[in-house]
Amino acid sequence: MVGVHVAASRYLNIYASADPSGKENGDQPVPGPDNGQMDGKGQNGQSGQGGSGSHEKVPNSGGGGVADVSDIVEAAMPTVVAITSTTVYQSNNYGYGWFFGGPQTYEVPSSGSGIIIGENDQELLIVTNNHVVESASSMKVAFIDNEVVDAVIKGTDAETDLAVISVPLDQIKADTKSKISVAKLGSSDDLKVGQGVIAIGNALGYGQSVTVGYVSALDREVRVSNNATRTLLQTDAAINPGNSGGALLNMKGEVVGINAAKYSSTEVEGIGYAIPISKAQDIMSQLMNRKTMNPVEEAKRGYLGIQGTTVDEETASLFGMPRGVYVYKVLGDGAAAESDLRDKDIITKVDGQSVKTMTELQELLACYELGEELELTVQTQENGQYQERIVQVTLKSMPQEEQSNPAQ
Image (cartoon, rainbow, N blue to C red; front, side):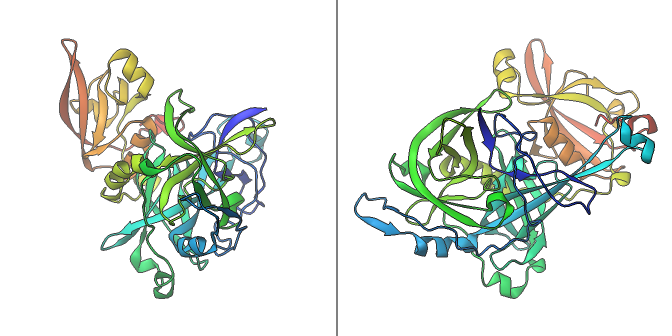
């Protein structure tokens, strides 16, 4: 059995009171929003951050002698957090549960990791993988002292599988602030095959643990779920479910990668992947500087009124189209119909924030109330060429008939 798995731990929980349990999700490509289900039981994001893990000895980055990594780990642990997100699903089919009160609601908790990368006047900023937090209805972060606080998504980039989440500084106790720190970022461009690395993350949702290994390969092309490829670091340091978003450190204690995935096979061991930090930094900076968007209550959310689909990297390259959300139908009863948005337009930004997937558009729109005006940047094909246009839209309430099977 062969597959590449997202290193996030996700388990199904029917009703909030049920015990979390899980089952391996088979062979699935990675990373992607729908294939993060892995086995393992978590502690609802509150498991101990200070677990000592297993500190093996590895050759140092200079190649001479062996080095105890415990000092490196001790310094890095305050920069890594455990993340627990919850996604709520509703079953609308007319199966067995329909006769016992209608559609059932399912809560799917998911555990992952994150790295503290900075702060502004109001927020602590944490980088993680997009697949750890995508579509989350709620999210909590646990620090090294086990203090748990709520977090929100600041920005995501599905193409690179990166996300930045934020925690209000006024929600963090002074004692906790004294124990956490911002990670030191290194350069993945300077890595060499054979150098020692350390992976830290919330493995299986049990709390922070440590594994060690080597850089196995640089610039490894890995195919992901949308048939695109990502260029990743390969390491034999164990990257387990729940490690997604955690830190891959060099022997100086600097972050050189963001743990992302593992290769799973009955015949292969010791193949894990991380996003190179040097390739991630530009995206991280963009996401850190976005305006924090908080989802509004569903009953108050505005409705755009389109049916659309993602223009992925492969489609864009094949047909010479811009990346974004392709509008294949403007619905007659929505806000879009009362604007200048047209069928076949490609939405690339919402209020200046880039969108590359339908999921990103949906998550942004969930932060706007009905009656709010937003600015869409769209690409319209005219005479065989795409031209940029700005479209103003005032969001409306969702029609009753759309609520059981909404578009956007």
